[in-house]
Length: 174
Image (tube, rainbow, N blue to C red; front, side, top):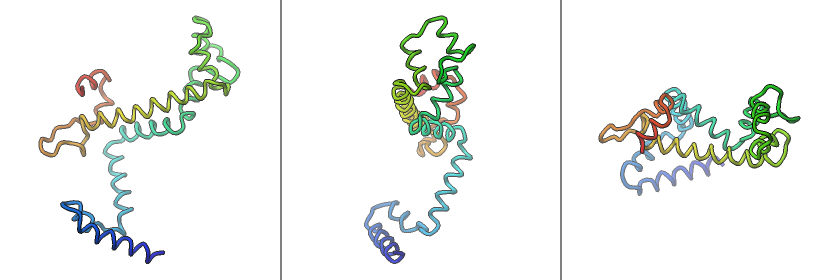
């Protein structure tokens, strides 16, 4: 097995000689044995340099792949429970003021394991996937340290996106 891996790496290295430009040079000079450590170090450095962006990405990825981990606690904080609205909560106040509207019933059915769970989880999954795309788009439009235009040096720190009102960021980016 180890011989097959070495043969595959040697074949890849020989094929890389045919690739034009800097990519071939990079592939030739990669220290394959140390590559996992290099990747790990780059990830650690990125997290240290961009902690807020990393946290945002982690939350959005969790929401996209496991929306129940976000939806259930959020609805619980609003007062939606498996036996109905919690007395004195936001949900109870809304219900007493507006009645059981369609949106309220949909949200209340989530902790009761009803029809709303799939709908609300689907909306959260779609919204978080869209937010990941929006963050990446804003990052590429404004950039963060490693996404700057090398010729002009243009690009705003993506970390600053979290320190400004959303409308200010969007106006500046569009």
